[in-house]
Image 1 (cartoon, rainbow, N blue to C red):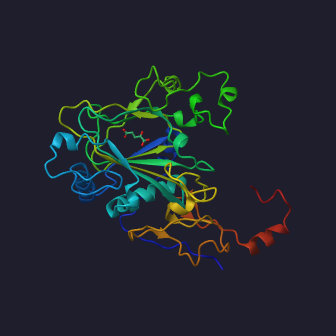
Image 2: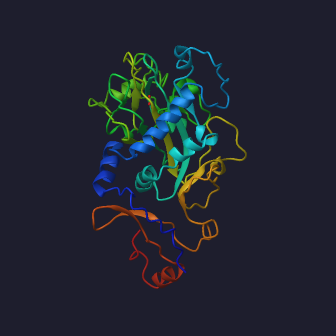
Image 3: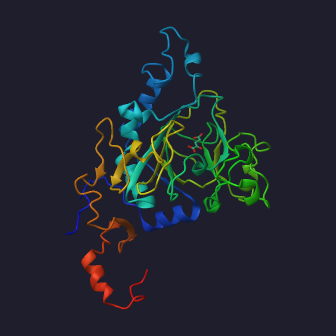
Length: 351
Ligand SMILES: O=C(O)CCC(=O)C(=O)O
């Protein structure tokens, strides 16, 4: 019996081409223009404004009084993490189907949704120095990917993201001062400058900038509302403070990984046992590992729990197809086939 991965057909499905797949793997990033529908961008932006202006409550933040001046309201924070766990709109954004279509093709087909971040970056604020996301969010094996949704135009003036193309081939550099018990960083990086103050805005202080300096071509990622940047978790990237006088830089940034990776990470919050997979949402496909379901009922294209994990089928696999597009191919060799193959000589089977 071959199990069917759910045959979800959506007319608006985004099909990633083999050229896009290659671009992502060669450069460490991929921009997909107009991926989010204009009305959906309005929904995400209006919701961001509801948070910014204190019209909706955010767990952990004190409610604002009715007469709080606007300039004080917008200075309360530049970003908020993990709202998909408390706000249906954030969950809906995190599980946006066309974004998952791309993630599925690049690191899937089985996708776990891990993190959401709302960036507001009012004039004069925001910015994060050179860093690599996989340092902060470990996945084993490493399959982490970021998706940066532009809720409005992002350019050099209002503090867009900058990337060092090709730098995703670098390993992760743990800052020495972190003194991680499992990373003998001083020994491992004896021939390298010690990495200190990752994410600090000042390149003199953040010595990951020395690795970034090896990549002469750094590009500002200029996006219009609705465009999405996908970026590899080892990619060196940064942003600068918003230096415009009046413009915000609102964006929604989400992280995903292959649902078969083990994720001992819960955004700094405790979790039971050795990994936190059971707290992250299965967004596509299936997995043999634990997972959570969407808390607010957002529909996701996953294999039904009855079918999932029965071990009767090989997992799906993204492959290039004859029409130049990426697709989840039924490359499932059943036990019977394997037995048949077993009659052939070993070595003939390929790897
Ligand atoms: O958008 C920004 O300013 C920084 C975002 C970023 O670097 C990240 O999400 O890893």
